Amino acid sequence: MRHRADPEAGARPRTGHVLLHYLRPHGGALVGAALSTVAVTLAELAAPWPLKIAIDSLVSGRGTHFDLSPADVSLLVGLAALVLGIAAVDALATFSSSYWLNRSGESIVHDLRTATYEHLQKLSLAFHSNRPTGDLVARVTSDVNAVGDLFAQTLGTLTSSVLVLVGMFAVTFWIDPVLAVVAFLVSPVLLATSLHYQKRIRLMARTQRHQEGEIASMATEALSAMQVVKAFGTERFEHGRVHQRSAERLKVGVEVSKVESRFSALVDVLGAVATALVLGLGVVSVARGRISAGDLVVVVAYTNKLYKPLKDIAKQASRVARSMARLERVAEVLGDDTVLAEGAGSTEPGRRAEGTVDLVDVRFRYLPQRRALEGVSLHVPSGSTLALVGESGAGKSTIGALVARFYDPVSGVVRLDGRDARDWSLRWLRSQVGVLLQDTILFSGTVHENIAYGTDADALTVREVAGAAGALSFIRALPDGFDTMLGPGGTGLSGGQRQRIGIARVLLRDPAVLVLDEPTTGLDPESEALVLAGLNRLVQGRTTILITHSTSLARSADMVALMADGRVAEYDAPERLLATDSRFRRLTETQQHLGRADDRTFGPAAPVLVDGLAVEL
Ligand code: ATP
Image 1 (cartoon, rainbow, N blue to C red):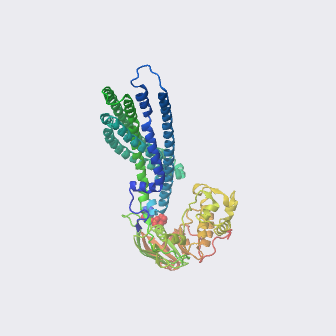
Image 2 (image 1 turned 90 degrees about the vertical axis):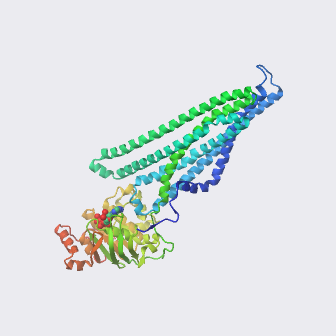
Image 3 (image 1 turned 135 degrees about the horizontal axis):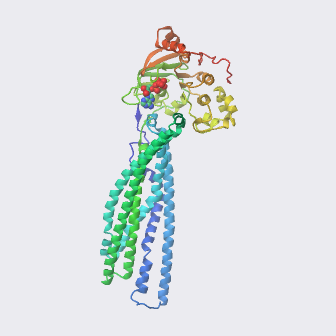
């Protein structure tokens, strides 16, 4: 498989780089938030000052009973106004900072979510087939949201706490350097403990998220296969599996809370020690006349408040640790480069392909240790049908997947119109190769939307292709016809009906090459006949690669390739294979013997399909 790094993804990005990349467009908003945070800090620092001024200028040294002069009253009014002014600045700045941060947080979540989802769409099947869907969904939803919370709730508090802390230290130092040193003695101890705890919390958060991803994958898998669960009566087993993971997650969750509470308690104790020291030393300083009583009020107020920013820093630091663990999961997806190569010179011819398909000495493996295809060479001329037969696991579907370019070969070449498929633009190639699988997967939406899927085809065109696919009569019988809403996965329709909608969907795209992967397997004879009629219409004028277990279907192809263990064992026209002692002939005879042979055929060579069945064309 040839994969290359997507130029947009570049080298695997680190968490920090991802964060910076998505922060950059919101620089303006973040500067606004930063300025507001500075204003909040100044308001917090200024808060005890009116009291200090009142004590120093109006109360100190005046005994127990004194009168206020007109100048004192003016000062008092001024101080009251100052208190109100400080509160107003605080309120306005808090509002503005929170608004800017929340706005940037929401925008960053939006950008990150859409980028992650877009990247998931770009990643090849090689990536998706190895990843549980539930885990990926958790990354696009809750993990991305947690990164948004980092801005909305954490960043502002953290910055403001650090600024308040620095501001308090500066003001206290200006009042009395000795007191400042004593008051802030606890900070380095706290910083060291904070770093220690943060690392532990981050590690545990990573485990938590990993377990949550596992729970999401298990639940998604079981809930989307409810039929199997009910059929095997494994409800308790499924419940048990999720319960066990959830219990493990609970254990780590409790451990995280314990570590956080321990940390918070430590901060309380350290803060109280600092306040006690400052109070004692402060009164001694006032007694010695080094500082005024008002100064002591400011310093004690700050030391008391020291708790809050320190505690906030500690709390937010653990939040940052958790958000970073979740951002890592998002960055991991964004950094994955399992993207199919599309060279700079890839061609978009702007015309319909002729439809000649070649495989030249193709080797392929899904996993390094197990080969799926070995030296496969096939030539399918434009407009002809090649049937791929052979036992299960022989590599038939893999050939179809390579022709549709879901994967690239490990070595050898797959060609469309004589040119390496990797040299055509992926978009054009996908528009030229239509794929119909054993079971058509439909999406929630109307029948019309499911047929038009990804195009803006009008009602008339959709009706035409539905008619050609033999789907008109049952669609008309649905309660709202083409506007009937289908449930997730197309619930409300039978397998045969879904398959005919699938045929209409492919017909609408009018591809030059068709890959039909056992399109009628699992259908009852009547539905199969209707689907075959639709297929008959579909294959006209197109190069078709038909993967089938039915030798009678294979007999209507121009060529048959019998696959065995990843190699082409027999490759010839069906009538020539039947004329010799071939494995294909033996397979045909076995199927006839088992009574599986019938008149199932389709394709230009066999226009008449199903006797007695009305198919609207
Ligand atoms: P069937 O008739 O049962 O559909 P097949 O002939 O189409 O079988 P393939 O589906 O092409 O066989 O599989 C060829 C080999 O590759 C098998 O051994 C299979 O186990 C393996 N294989 C198929 N898909 C994957 C995958 N996604 N990851 C790993 N191995 C895979």
